[in-house]
Length: 176
Image (tube, rainbow, N blue to C red; front, side):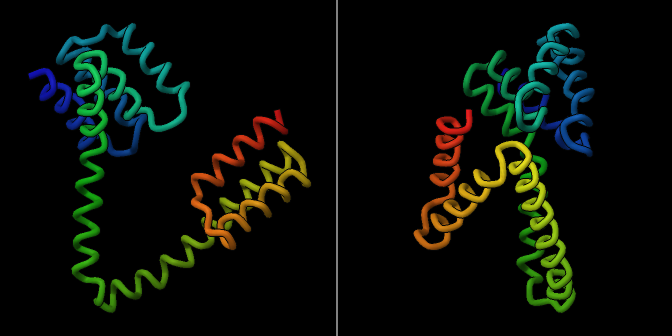
């Protein structure tokens, strides 16, 4: 029964909380403090503070922690799944609709307009990363890491996870 309660405590806010993590916070508080009484307001504010301090989505961290606290590892899995389930179901539904109509002229026209926008957004993101890296570690380190990463990815077909891990190791050894 506790797993069903954990699921409902995070699934309902996931459905109703349009706007991401900050919009879910009062809804989750209502469920875990008001409805189920798993936490006090003070405890909830501590969980919220920890969730804000860690990287990643707030709601999933809260769901994982509170789910673990109430139902162990399975409770954490249920809580995290319940938070992401509404978005997952919606995305799968929209993908299914898109795939059914992929030959439609309207859908083809939509992708013609969306692709350049995504390209520009990725370009802006890349520029921001390079500017931040240049300011943080210097021009030559940025060029070195970027060039080596490019060749590892494009010429030698190394998996991106290994390139990222290698860059982290390089940074930990030479840039700390």
